[in-house]
Length: 89
Image 1 (cartoon, rainbow, N blue to C red):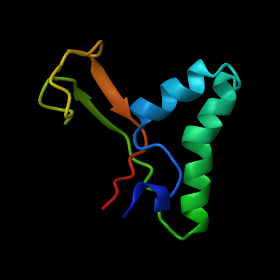
Image 2 (image 1 turned 135 degrees about the vertical axis):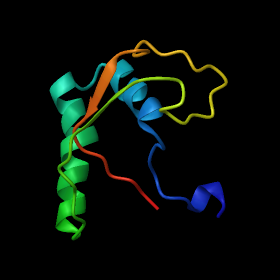
Image 3 (image 1 turned 120 degrees about the horizontal axis):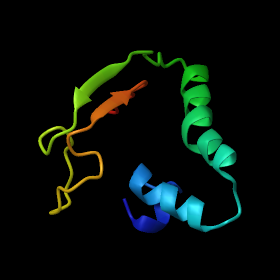
Image 4 (image 1 turned 30 degrees about the vertical axis):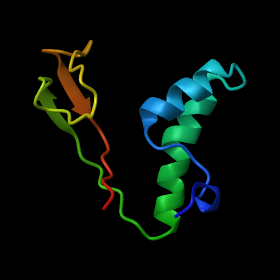
């Protein structure tokens, strides 16, 4: 699909968060609403079931998949808890 015909939006939280945060237009509560609460509400209204699960594991280089050549993280060797996960296909 040509870029000009693609839907608007930002792929990935790693791109969306810094753009919204650095704009100084929205506070952190508004950002959380945009990035967490509203997508959940919209998907629920569309009939998707959002699983309410909690998973905990120790962060290591093999846990997260990234295209970045740098695997360092400030969460290295820390317990990470994910409360809600929605995976797309």
